[in-house]
Image (cartoon, rainbow, N blue to C red; front, top):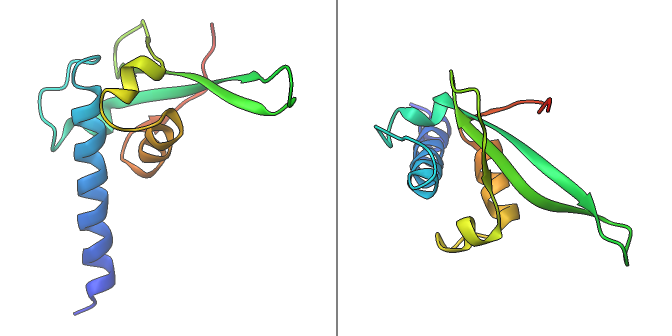
Length: 103
């Protein structure tokens, strides 16, 4: 039996739970074990005026089937102990779906 595949499944399960718990106050999460795959998200970037570097401004997120996105900003995420970049990394590694935002 190969432990690597099982280890990755466990890690992904933990990441999915972290995402679901972090977004539970913003989105309607019914099951932290199964609802992560129903999250759609899109990072919103801005350009730092001084450094001219791309900077993560907020993350738009919604549950599949909803028309309106919720904006996750620094204040929403830091209460979970995560930075915006860590939240985006967790979303990217979870079962959540990254989509293109069209205003």
